[in-house]
Amino acid sequence: MRPFESPWKSLGTLDADATAHLISAAADVALVLDKKGVITDMMLAPADLATTTGGDWVGRPFIDTVTIDSRSKVEDLLKTAAGGATSKWREVNHPQAAGNDLPVRYSAMQIGSTGGVIAIGQDLRQQATMQQRLVEAQASLEREYSRLRQAETRYRALLQVSSEAVLIVDAPSLKVTEANPAAAQLLANGSRRTVGRAFSELFGPDTAGV
Image 1: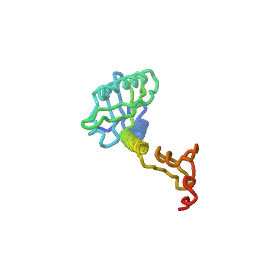
Image 2: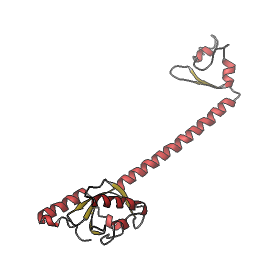
Image 3: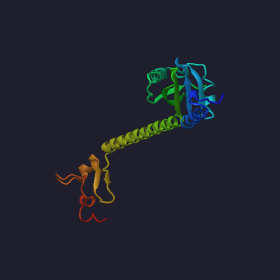
């Protein structure tokens, strides 16, 4: 792939070189397009992008280098730039030779008086990887929560049907936090409920301290 040349040739050699350097520093991808949206020059900063994307895009319409679902975004980029405004950043996907699509965030602007456009892009692969890991972590947490919820449901069902008296006591306060029906029936004193009472109150004076 040939070295990237600045599209602002009319500005002179010094300004053209400075512009090319600025674009290289600020963007992972820079595409120079003619007024028909065909790529006439390009720069790919990460060394692996040329291999990842399957080669040189020069001579191809920009819209043909992206996935079908991204074509409308490219049309919007070019339409906004052709109107003389700098387009908003739009995320598009380029199909790769193998593996997942290459996500790139682009903005575009018109250059000179010929109707040409330059599109600068940021490689979003790292962000996409982080987002995928976040989605996987969330899914894992949801699965674990569902497992715990099912275990709690089974535990409560067993507690309710058990014929043996079962009490759950809070260790710091020694108050009863849960009691199954068998325990409530066995230990209830008149109208007083079992849950919320001190564990020692449930027994007679001769056994409360044992």
